[in-house]
Picture 1 (cartoon, rainbow, N blue to C red):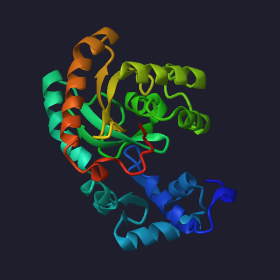
Picture 2 (picture 1 turned 30 degrees about the horizontal axis):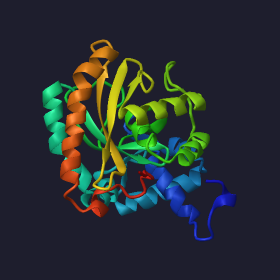
Picture 3 (picture 1 turned 90 degrees about the vertical axis):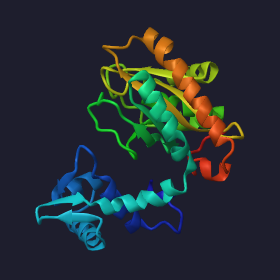
Picture 4 (picture 1 turned 45 degrees about the vertical axis):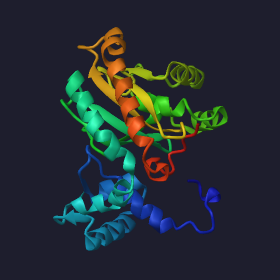
Amino acid sequence: MPAADRAPHFVRSFERGLAVIRVFGADRPELTLSEVARGCDLTRAAARRFLLTLVDLGYVSTDGRVFRLTPRVLELGYAYLSGFTLPQIAEPHLKQLAERVGESSSLCVLDGDDIVYVARVPTRRIMTAAITVGTRFPAHATSVGRVILAHLPDDEIDIRLERADLRPLTGRTIVARDLLRAELARARRQGYAIVDQELEEGLRSVAAPVRDRDGVVVAAANIPVHASRNSLESVRRDLLPPLLETVARIERDLAVTDPGRAASPGSGTHR
């Protein structure tokens, strides 16, 4: 966030501390002081103060050379997930879906310009990146992101596409805004989205939106598959129908829960 856009209450040091936590990831579980400083655009002295504070609080450990997050960081997301009904509702249905089709299934919500995994039932590893609850990907290059974005008001879609960092993740990633708008319109019209090797080469994914009792799209469920084993035709024929049936069951269960707890706070989804 540019300095000029920050509100008077904005605490810059808090932002930097969170940046230090976020710089770690599945592909970077251990980092040196210099790597953290570069990744957060901090001086080594500032990065060291933040890291040692996190060590004192129990969120980071170190052997004196490298730093790594500790399981205690899970506490930061637990309060959200423990009060978030949707993953608990969806998980048994996702398990049934995974068993039925023999492929992984997931539930994601929109957070800013990313999608975040809030429930996942893996059957086999099909992506280079390890996916767990909390994993994030750019929404524009994912099937789940597109079906959620597709149901936003048109003016909000325009705003999001204008500000999004539409960098190509593979040679197939759609980055032209007019083409993405067309894809979102298609997803809204047909009720699902298929993304073909735009997030990762060799990966196809089909997703459908999940609505709460008021008809608001609050999440999306998907099935990712190997492109070598599944043609686009077979994805539509063999995977889309059970996915839509699963989503319908999730929505039926969701309709009898408290919608204030079931919907994702801050997801930015609308009717």
